[in-house]
Length: 159
Image 1 (cartoon, one colour):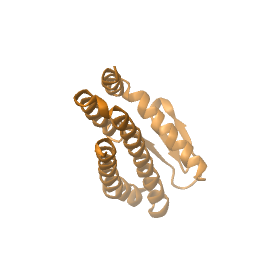
Image 2 (cartoon, one colour):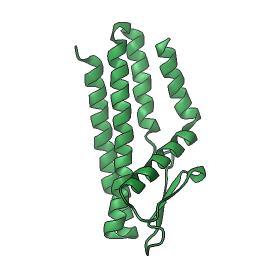
Image 3 (cartoon, helix red, strand yellow):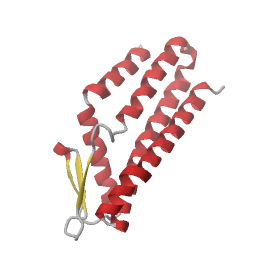
Image 4 (cartoon, one colour):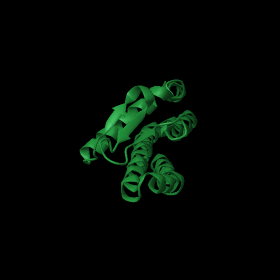
C-alpha cells in the first residue's frame, strides 16, 4: 500500500507541478518578507516573486519547471518505492529518509532563490542575476541535491 502511495505521489508531482511550483514561490516570498527584503510581492498565478519593488532595481523571479525542487523530489519517491517493494522491513527507515531528503531538497532550492536575491541586491540586476543563476545557484543546487541524496541513502540503508 505504501509503495502505491509513493508512486501516486510521484505521479502527482508530475501532474500537479504547476501547483507545486506555486507553493514553492509563495514560500520564497514569505522567506523574503521575513528576511526584510524591500517590496516583495508574489503573483502565484505566474509562479513569480517580485522583490525590490519601489527601488531602483526591482526584479521578478519565476519558478520554472527547470528551477523547481519537484524533479529532485521525484526520484527520491520512486527509489523509495522500489526500496520498500524489495525490502518491506525497512519501510520506516525509507519513509524517514524520504522526509529528510525531500525537506533538504526544498530547503536547498529556497536557499538557491535567496542566494540569487542576495547577489542581485549586492551586485545589481545584470551581474547579480548572471552569477546567481548560472554559477552560484547551480552550485547550490548540485551540492545541495547531492547532499540530500547522500542523506537519503544513508538514512534508508543504515542499520
